[in-house]
Length: 588
Image 1 (cartoon, rainbow, N blue to C red):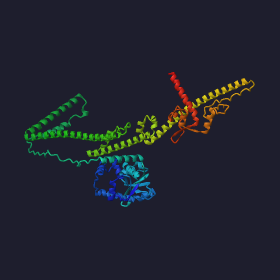
Image 2 (image 1 turned 180 degrees about the vertical axis):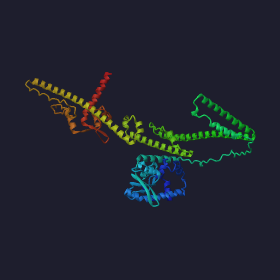
Image 3 (image 1 turned 90 degrees about the horizontal axis):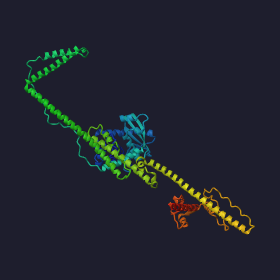
Image 4 (image 1 turned 90 degrees about the vertical axis):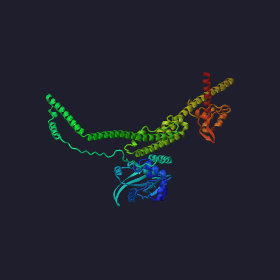
């Protein structure tokens, strides 16, 4: 990490932030910040124009820096070392630290205590229990500084007096760091492709012209009416109506039905009386009828418009989700263009995930921001998945000679982490090598046994020939001593160097068995070219010898080396191969 001599909040510090990818912006970049939308950070980064900080926000920032300074001695007591506020960079990444140890192995991050943190920072809490946007900021700090842990502290102060303090340790999370790096990569691509949108005014419903104020003034009086007497009689009649508990006999039900009929007749008389009275007031009746007509027209228009608004609003929501899903699928298509058979697919829940992102959002702009953040995270996840697949493909490419061991390579590249795949490859290759070594050893053992048997037969035949010659000489002389019986031939000749020695001739020439034993004892080496010179006009390659069970035991410059003691076995293997070929040809 490179330290930068800047004071947090200074103009130089702001210029530095504009040229780097900053820890405090990482939550917004991933679309998880409760304070800034990803679209807002994208616009600010692409245009260089940021929102003005009002006085209330500035005071809140100033208070935060003051509380941070008050809390730093408390943090130093917990860490056991001095903590230095500083700004550091690692390539294009930057972070401002509330405190960092001299060796940069631990950092300090302070926040003002709020209800969200109180709910998370209970007794025994860990850094992994903190809200995600705090963890992302601290992981970015660890990435820049190389620190392995961060002391996270939240405190509340009354002036310079501590009211409440809570803290826990956050430890570096490499999986989260990988997500942050991929997120910044996607963010930079989005900045490069950014196109400014037309200015959006805050939607405010304006008054709708068309309905003037309704004014109705009616003058008139009732000349004669018995409405009061009628009402009193109606109240008395209603009071005498049968109750449910009075309905017992047929007579009771007949009386009740008669009462119902009387009520219907009374309602009709009331309606007729009202209509007759209104008819005598033609202007008032026409006005009331017009009011009713206009009200019905307005009601019908209201219902139709409300339906259209709901349908169109739903269509806009669906379009936002559909466009987001399209952008994600296009990102997957771009990635798949370079993955050949290792195609990755968007999650089946893509539409559901994007629809869940806009749940509870009241305005289309908020819906668009939410879907934009969800789309960015889906792209980030796809890029991370593609990077893992490419890493796995590279691992398998390192073992191309063992490609037959990985018929399931597509599934492995899609499902395994690179470290896990590397371990699996090593295990499969080791097992294949063990099996191949056993096969070669069995093949060599078979050749040894066949060669030993052949040598035993040759030695036995030689011994019998010598015995016959001695017997013939004895018969010709007549008084010669009987020839000594040949030495018994060992039965076990499977192990290298144990082939019985053939008897030497009168000139003392070593037998084939003696020559093999001498070669084994000397551990001599022979070049591939020398083998071909001995078996000329035949010839064999290193791969051919390996197939016969005789791999190279070393190299001398560019020449392959083999055991001198294996040459007779090589010749025997070649002879057996030629013999088998001749027999197969004859049988055909």
